[in-house]
Structures are given as structure tokens and as C-alpha cells.
Amino acid sequence: MKYQDSLEQASEKAAQVKVFLQRAGLAAHPVNYAVCYDYISGHHAGLCTAIEHKLSAKTPFDDFIMADLYSRYLTPANPQQEQLLQDASGIVSRLTGYTDLAAEQVADYLQQLDFSLLQLQQQQNGDTILPAVEQLRQQTLAFRNGQYQLQQQLEQANQQSHQLRHELEQLKLQRQLDPLTGLYNRSAMQQQLELWFTEQPGRRVAAIAIDLDHFSRFNQDYGNAIGDVILSKVARKISSYVQSSGLPVRAGGEEFLILLPDVDLRSASEIAEQVRRGVEKLRFVSARSKKALPKVTISLGVSLYQHSENLYQFLARTTDVLMLAKQRGRNQVASETMLALPA
Image 1: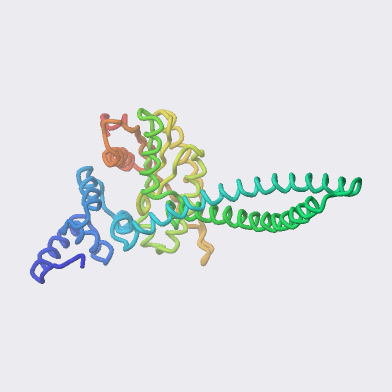
Image 2: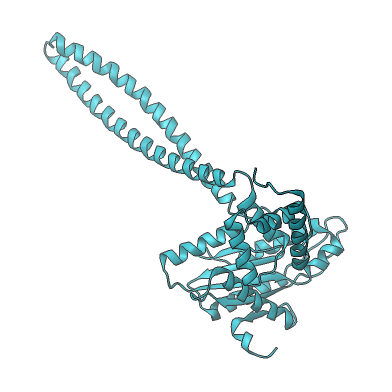
């Protein structure tokens, strides 16, 4: 068993969990409790490291982050499922290559057989053909018919392997997406950053942190169902300003992040302003009452990745810039250059 705590040990850990949740402003529901209990128990090194990074970077915890930690580190069989997905993808890729090659080779061989049979037929019509050659021709003809059947089977298997490969790629993609908004999740964000810096160690990456203004009040007034619709539509609008090279991410409950490779601070700030104006122009109507809902605005913070910092420090600094935009009145863009300026 994973936990073998006595009643006294469990009670002591439960008290520590309660303190952690209270300090973080989190509800003591099962997911949050499980993450905190495992962190305090120290059973999972990866989970402990992730939480320590967030604490050192002063990253605020919310239900979205806790659910992400639970999914990544505590969901049963998650590592096995991930490895199984990788193994299956590799097998299908190799199978697709084999069937492609086999189908090509069989097609070439059948073409050669047809040519040889044609020569034998012409020889038979013009001259007396030896019995051994006639027997060889008959055997070759039978073999040719069998190869045509094999070719059909290979073509069918090839189609199935390509379809399976497509479905596996779609499954891998779905595991990287937030189900509500369709944007990438934190796991995909970390993988993409690692890929960018592997390709080009000194690469410049800009980040735009986005937060919906007064969204908790909006949820209280109109309910979480309408709030989810608003989040989904705002996410779609944000994504429309991100080119294929960038990465739109859902970073928290009503928090989003845009990562832009090979973009300087000025250009990123201009893109952020375009996003702000685009969201501000959105209009929402209640499907039930047909009444217009309040205008939704966003605050944005823009910063550049410094290669002397880690990912958590980068995100924390970007959040500080976002908070500056909120302090200055919301519905505006703040740049990291403003951190040194008076509010």
C-alpha cells in the first residue's frame, strides 16, 4: 500500500494539510486534499519538486493547478498509460513504414511477373514450349494470383495502419489540450518550451499573461455554466491572434498565456493590445433571457524569458507584470519595463 500511516500520523498530516489549504485559499475537496497529503508525505518526488518550485516562485495555487498536479502525478496508471501511448505510436509508425514498403515491392514484383508471363505466352504461341517451361509458367501464374491477393490485403492493412496512426496522433493531441477551451495545457506548454530551447538554446521567447477582469464576480452573478461559455469564447478570440508558431495556453481558471518564439518585447506588447481590443469588442447575450450580459475585459502582462531563470520564475515574473496591469486599473496591457516605474 502507498500509505501505511497510523491514526496519529494521519491526524498530524491532516492538520498540516489543513494549514496548507488555508494559506493557499483552497477548498478541502478530495483532489486538493490528496495532492497536499501526498506532498506532505513526500511519497512522490516529482510532485514535491513541482510544488516547491511554485512556492519558491510565489505562484498562487488554484483548483486548476491542483487538478493538473493530481492528473500528472497522482492519477493511477498515468505513467503506464503515457508509456503505452508512446509505444503504440512507435509500433504503428513502424508498421506503416513496413506496409508502405511491402506494398511497393509487391507492386513492382507483380509488374515483373506480368511481363514474364507475357513473354512466355508469346513464346508458346510462336514455338513449341517445353513441358518444364509450361509447368513453370503455370506455377508462376498461380503465384501471381496469390500475390495479387496479398497486395489487396497489404493495401487494406496499410489503410488501417494509417488510420490508427492518425487516431493515435489525435489522442496524443487531446491529452495536451484543455477540454473546456481547446487551448493547450501546462504540460504541453512545458514540453513546447523545452523543444524550443533544445532547437535553439538562446532562443528569444515572449509571454503574454492574460486574466479576465472581475470574472469571479461574473460567475457569482450569472453562474458557472454561463461563465464556462464566456471562457470558451474568450479563449477562441485569444487563439485567433496566435500564429502557428505561437502557443495559446490555459494557465488557470480564468487565466491564459500566449507564448511567442522569436518575438521581441515591443512586438509582443502590440499583439497583446490587439488581443485586448478584440476581447473588449466581444458581446454576449443570455440564451435564456435574451438580455445582454456585461462587457468582458482582460488585463495583460508581457515579458521576455531570461535564460538565467527557470520556467516557474519566468511565469511568476510574468504574473507580476499582469498584476501591475490590474493595479493600474485593469483592461490594459503592462510590460515588464513598467515594473521599475511608479504606478
